[in-house]
Amino acid sequence: MTRRSIVLLGGPDSGKTNYIGRLWPSFKKRKGVLRAERLPDDIAYVDGAVEHLMQGSFAPRSDRNLEVGRADFSISVRGANGQGNLTELMVPDISGELWTRTVATFEISQEWLDVLNEAEGAVVFVRARSDQIVQPLDWVTARNILRLDAEDDESVAGPEAAVGDEQMAAVEAEQSLSGDDASNVVEVPSEPDLPTQVVLCELLRYLYLYLADRVDGGRPHVAVVVAAWDLLDPEVRAAGPMAYLKREFPLFAGRLADTGRLDVRLFGLSVVGGDLEDDEEFRNRFLERDISEQGWVVVNDGDGLRTDEDVMLPIAWAMGE
Image 1 (cartoon, rainbow, N blue to C red):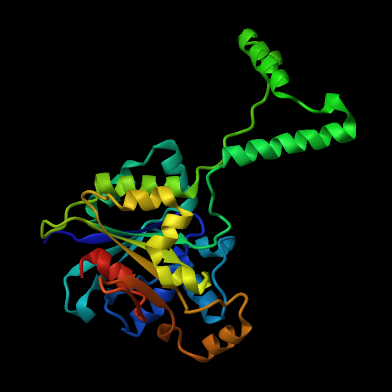
Image 2: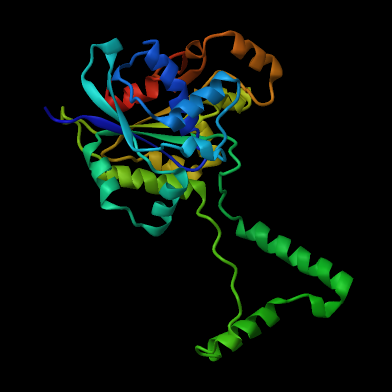
């Protein structure tokens, strides 16, 4: 039998770990559209994420204990409430930072190429309001800010403290004439991190190039999940995930408008249904209920946005269910 699999991917602080932690109780209690044939016995970092959620807090990305026992693993699942085809849900042992580095360097190991080549679908995560989101530079604004800083320095320390355009040009000219003499090299600031939307575009490009065609001949399915959807303002949520991406990541949204051989669907996700960090009233309600009964996703099903309590739906879509 041909192996069917999908892969879960996300950059730094994308919400993937908390999502996996939220799936575990539903798998164990057989709630949701997916059924796990058997859960891995010793996945310490998943158990750690579940423990954080059960105590009413999200798993912090800085908690190194979540990495203990971390390993590449897969879960055999069936869709259609256990009546669908068997699919391997692949969770690669690779951090969001490493995926970002892969995108930045255009270097991906053969091992991870094999993972993508074996998968016929993927779930890609991006978390709203994450402090790890890198916005593209606004060069006009940045130049004005630098000019203002230079003027402030000049007002405090005199004209010699400011470096004007002419002086910078002179420095660059001197450096160009200095050859390889290290003593004349002017240090240039390191390049900023890649904007998040560029990373997302490149991840989508990898999926476009390497995901396998579906067994039935259809296009590979990719679910793009905007996590922490509950933190957004009501009017933003009402407009849907695509409107949010157009506003926050216009380059990525434009790429999603022409996905070629990929069949993409967007989801908004709240892992537990509310804010555990800053909403004490919600946190108290959360602790009184079973975790497998909390959380929801939103999806545009053709007739407008629909909210569903089954957080497994993005995976089911990637599986083709």
